[in-house]
Length: 467
Ligand code: MN
Ligand code: MN
Image (cartoon, rainbow, N blue to C red):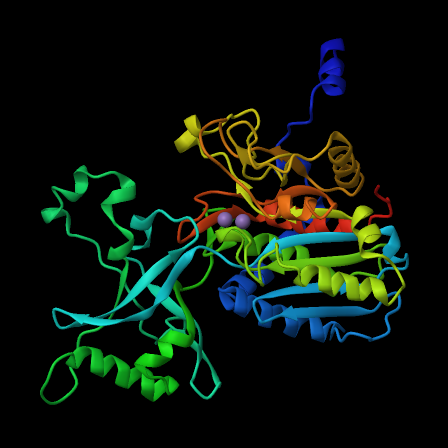
């Protein structure tokens, strides 16, 4: 080796490709993990479905629903189901909670089209459902694709009815139309944000009229079908949470099957990475806490969002079983805000700083700060916190990379990190780089999915304490 090669090796960052650095053991475990993750993606498309799905897996692994007053000791596994829309898991560690917890906070809501409270109408002998988009979307992307309806309806007597239309092979799907190109002269002159408007995102659900005379016969026929299957009437939409999401399953992408496209990688790819290690890990030193939050896409507000005091209530309960103070527990805890970041896309290279953006197959992306413009709204992690992350991942064999959210002044975004840090918990953003984030189908790499899971696994078992 020449002197200069030696200098390069010792002084430069290691920027070798992820596939040149991954160990044979990790490479072998990667595909199985990703197939399990794809099952989760396919079976849990909404926050409610994710809560149900994870409870079933957790109970099979020994987790029990937390009841206030329940005695807890090291190795115990509990969860708190926050109204069926967000969930907290805790694996009690051998050290007391007064020494802090290791917390991974992800979210299980994704951008979609929610139904309005009075959605159903008939126009031009076709039946439609009015929607109100949820989260940040490019509206035109949600037209002309197969959509499925997921959610719950609460009947007047309080009965909860689960709805899912469009996911099984012989189910029909719902559809938002777009204007034919032949007549789109005016539409094509509009900007991408104006070309399809929010009030044009109407779901086509039928075209056959009910038998007999009178108005709104197609709407009536649609209600007859809904009533026959679910026992619901038009007024029941007023006490419902129904949403349209892309129908169908996640698929491998690329001739080498190295990538995965699916609906809602943001943020179920990190939610699954944060959850999966809890099913198999040994008793940790520090209590492992996994938070799967709702409402991140609209600001983490409300009882099921990460700003909710429900989290304090759960953690305070756990602390009380040990006579520990919640404030001291938070002060000594460490949190990964496990959320996706943007992957460098060479087709849109000008939107990113290439030297600082996360790349596909670079491993878990660690974001020191998010925010926009002059770091506005960012939870800017300290050098000390980043130092811990480096030690943790490099000692734990986790392939990781730094990440920033695009070119400065190009846009920006945030995660639950700031809300966790405001609780006096040292917090760093880390997650999977995503191509086409918030599109109906997003793309991630298998290697990055696996490394994010490995990152969370070594974090839960880490023995280093925090101040
Ligand atoms: Mn997210
Ligand atoms: Mn998002």
